[in-house]
Image: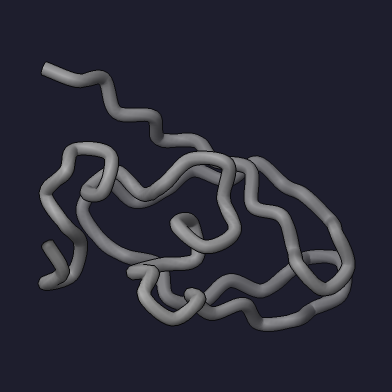
Length: 72
């Protein structure tokens, strides 16, 4: 069984601030507020969550190739 990575470094596309965050194991995170510039991040079109769009590691369901939030 593949090891799932639960930490990802989210990088704000607006100000470049990066912060390590722990991802939820079984849910998507649709919104994330940058702690530096306070921009509310949302997933890019076609991505299921902010970790898949702006993180160093995709979300756990995508890592397990299960799809995420109804996406396969």
